[in-house]
Every structure is written in C-alpha cells, then in structure tokens.
Length: 144
Image 1 (spheres, one colour):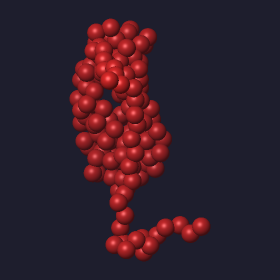
Image 2 (image 1 turned 60 degrees about the vertical axis):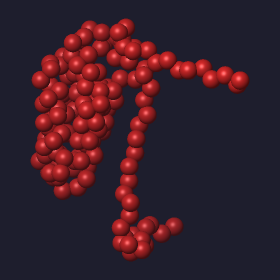
Image 3 (image 1 turned 180 degrees about the horizontal axis):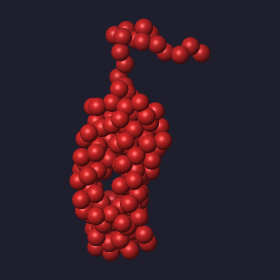
C-alpha cells in the first residue's frame, strides 16, 4: 500500500488530525492530565526549549498536585507554562502538549482545587466520587 503524500490531495492540504478522550464521573481529570503530560514529555525531541522544558515542568507540577502536595499557585503556574509552549515550537507537539492542560484547567479547575484543598482525600478517592460532588440524575424514559 502506498503512503499518502501531499500531492495525493486535490488542494495540497488535508483536514488535519484530532482525538478525544471520554471519561465518566468516576475518573480523575488531574490524573489523566498528568498521564498526558507524561506522554508528551517523553515524546518531546528536545529541540525546542519551550517544549523540552515546559513539558517536563507540566509533568512535575501535575504529579505534585495528583500526589496531594500541590498549592493553589501551581494551577496558575501550569496555565502560564502551557501558554508559553503553545505557538512557540517548531512542530505541533508543543501545541498538542499544551492544549490538554489548558482544557483541563479551563473546564475542571474545581477538581484541581479539590486535590489541593483535600490532599489526604485525593489519594483515596477521585473528585467525582467526593461526598459533596453533585450527583448525576439520569431520567428514566417510559415506553408510554
């Protein structure tokens, strides 16, 4: 089978690529964000300083938060680091590493704060299973 090349596309370009991860309420967003950061740090070739240094720092800070040793300023530090990576690398790996961290903080900041405010609890249970978390009510559909 022949590999696709740019000249194989009528316009000389393609739509791009993407992916997503679906988590239910029993999963820990902080832990999954740490796992992604760890992957991207490992995959970085090290050529660009923002990616080489930034992915390592994001991994360390996320591990610190996930391990119950984080402080509130770590969340803002993560935000600043990902902003300094995005758009400042030669290849798209830097952007790919920064975007999950930005999305996690943007949409689940309360989970990061819960990890920091409840260091003992975050080692035993996930935020989604915390006692004060809102329950998910699924309506029962009838056949009538």
